[in-house]
Length: 352
Image 1 (spheres, rainbow, N blue to C red):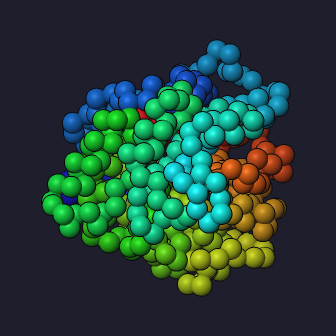
Image 2: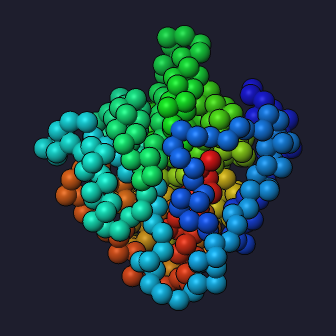
């Protein structure tokens, strides 16, 4: 058992307090909170020091935005939590490189974007290896924030393979881990090495839960055990089976589909967001959109109650793709501070 898991007194619901501290301050802006790609501050060596460091990490008010509640939501910073690059044509879809992604961001008023790697062989629609993603985004350090992945099954080659690969990616500028979507249970022992390293390097994890990857049972008991076991790691949850749990009436069949109809209160998603400061919901893709539109009245309250732990994303992956999430700011009514959280501030807070 890792040092992160064993005997950790903070292994309890709502152990971390970072987002609640951040919610009391206004954002410093996209360029103020995130440094240049590849420049990471030294990480405190002990768990106690890390806890102190996190509790002191308060975003200072921005003189230009402090007290601003008027104006258009569209004028607020927008940081996309979920985009991809595709190295070659696949499934009759054109490839997408960094130039094309930045042009798309410009056309839609998106300031910055996380670019996720796809290293696992199950990746859809095609693998986009971390080394290639890091190479692509290097031309846009002020716009594109790279995440990396390592398939945990590479442990078969040698004991330190995963560590060596991840350290190399971090040295090249990776700021998070994802999209994590191997065809394994979310609590598979081989993933513990990934979770340990993300705790060590202070990397948030964006994970994909469905019927093929990061497998779990109805009620998400395995997911909860993992996030409770790693309180210093921020988990950004995404895809079908995660968002099916916005409602209480979930079955195993919902792992790979978009449930329809009114949401039954008491779902595990709001429960987990209430219980764990290190859990966030990624609103991207068809799964996030379905969660927001199958029961708009419920979704309005959900956004208002959980805006401190939701991140806006597109899951843009190929040229010409339609992104309905671009209309979410007109569909729901939130105050400016809540929209700041969802549009940029929450994502800024988890990327070191």
